[in-house]
Length: 431
Ligand SMILES: Cc1ncc(COP(=O)(O)O)c(C=O)c1O
Image (tube, rainbow, N blue to C red; front, side):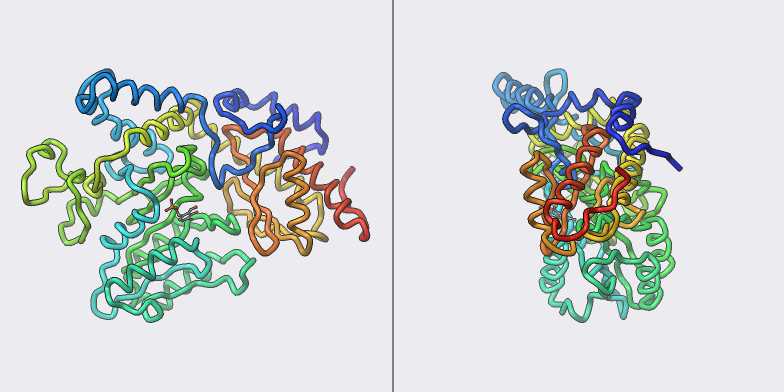
């Protein structure tokens, strides 16, 4: 249990002792009138590494000098970039490099994974999802089922927390899997819910899904680069994520998938194919019948964007330099600090929707006037996220946020609460 003092000097002492403190300098922090803003939106769009522009320029230069030969020549041929990304990502995903493929965008990859991992047979046809999944996941699953000529209302089993603003309980998911064990073909959930910030017990959910005879996959948009994952050991069948949030790959960054190695040689899995998934050694032989790369790279379809690869590489280089274990350790400390400060503000004006199982994000549901609070925070230089009906989400990120920024957020919120709810009694805080 960490003990904290609630004052700015203590916050500064946490920053002084922070072994990752200098990494903030590797990012471009948005400014207003020459002053850095307090950016708590790593759950939305991670900040730009200063090295990204140079990485892009290197690709442009290579292209200018060597044209298409750049795929095969120079210090870092473009053909080798994918493997370099896989090596770095494997640490963050808890996977073997061969189980990963960096490709496309997240929603596209959800469709591709559904093609492979939704294998309805006999009465085993159902897909277990969460009722409050991110909309794109819902649209993808619905349209995919309709494309197969199936009625989503007959196929989908939705786990509901009972209320829009309450996190789901892992037990409810586990019970729903048990209840539908004979009918489930697939369990597909968000590893961290985008709205509440809740982190699911993916290891346990994978185990019970497997025992029920269903495949299991996760959308890890809000989990990758944020929390510790062990996708291989958890025996997850597949996962997919975008790279523009905690991975700082830039707007519309190239996404990635995890396909457990136990499926790589399974020819009964259907998949949509394209030439970039062809066995690398023979890809340019232009043969007619498709022979996939013998691992997750076999799910690739198209020539990748080397520019997007280079953006992601810049950020993953920072992760490698900082060390994933160090990043996770700082995340835990920073979130304990934030949680202690939020608790100190009491529960009269807002409640924290995020349970203890979470990553960097917390979601605060205001009882009223949440939008006013959000706008005042914004005016004071805090970049946080607004969600209807009354939710402010924020995510301090270990690579570029500081303990002092978290302190400033607390002090500002305390003052704003006093201002906005002036007719009521001021918030009970420790100072
Ligand atoms: C949980 C989740 N799933 C899916 C998406 C959609 O991702 P994309 O637009 O990259 O397909 C997002 C986007 O933020 C998301 O947060």
